[in-house]
Image 1: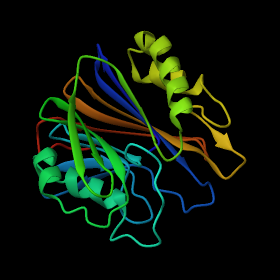
Image 2: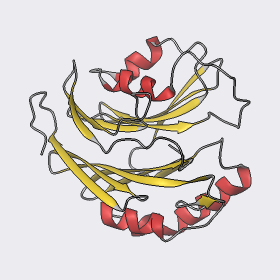
Image 3: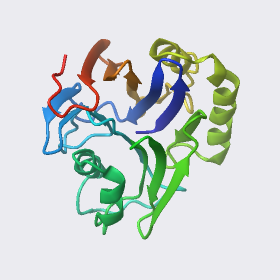
Image 4: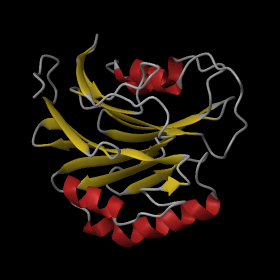
Length: 238
């Protein structure tokens, strides 16, 4: 939920999501294959019952980043977790349509990267207003959470990405790229004085008619991989 990368790889569209959190926080479950109203979905479940990164057998991918354009002052209470917004949009035949309709009153600011109906969207909620932009799906992109990474850090991370993006054409290469940029404060894999660190890396991809979720639990050194057939609501998870 703090770093998102998109790569239009030869093998298929590829996303990465690095989750930076307090390691003392209740851990999220590994990804599950869940049956929803609109079809089958794969995502890890956090303590509030939501998620930060998921995919759908219809081809949707939705990934959350904390914050919108800049860091914000956190309120004591919000109507619900941002992760529940992700699961609500995920279980929809058209998440972009639902994004326009959804009520975000008293929801903490966030950014969503969404793949829907063959288009790549960047949507933001700054606490007052929704913003939407269609991104070039034929080009690589990177997003860094505004709540954790200031402008200087984001520019540094963008330089790393620009230098290495052309060498990434598979999930394993993307995973290695992220791990090659470990830095305590601002790395793609980071660890700030034990108070916040990269707990997991999620790789989500479309490949050979399948949607695949590869989850690396960095704390427990475990890997989970689940696939579901694309375009079929009755696909079986593997």
